[in-house]
Image (cartoon, rainbow, N blue to C red):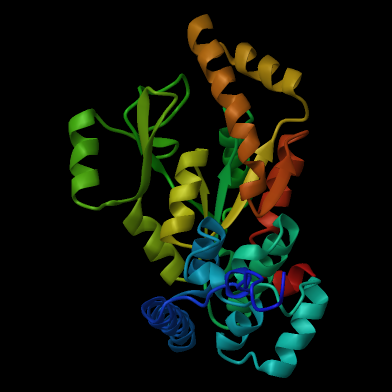
Length: 314
């Protein structure tokens, strides 16, 4: 067969075809919109319209969202008084590559960056560690540790929660809780008087009155919130500068012993709370610090130490 009669094979099909013009235009517009959205976030940080901690929270929750796609270097240089030279040093100290985006950080990198930003805010006129949330699984001793702090550290203000559950033996109205009925709790929710609230153990509702917390912080006082894990998450969304402390039991067996030993719940309720506690323990990595409640006085002191200015602690 001569060359003239041989079938001619097209090589065009082997080449990847370029996207249609309309696709390139759409992609370009999407890229421009994404850049503008990230620029708006950085501008909001620079002007103080958004807290850097709020941006971090959103980035960690939505890694592929606008905040999550911001490079760590761009995020840091958006914070007032942090320039390029300082950013390079910070990145090296935190062990974060310059190419990393907020949403692509590992667990330890996220924690280090958040602690740095909280430290920076504290040293530049922010609330810093004046708002600390103490949470943990049922029967871990949150109330006992908080009561110890109330007695021995009068400089720390303890927020008093409202609850729809009845008082336990020895609990005092206005000191341990505000005991309210469902109608009053509904009114407080509708009026926006609660910083956070949740239904705990599928039974009673608990909430933190907003005004006393805001007034205490505005006056320069340290405030400790002793609440459940759901509430801690809500506080972080509402006040991203809050420091979250997770109170752990020494062992699972000790947690069971404490729950059964206090004798305030029926066997069925004890079992339900233990099932909830197993789930709650998995939330420990969401918190900034962990304190093991081996000894009440020691655990209380560690929590109070976390409320001191960071530069003083170092």
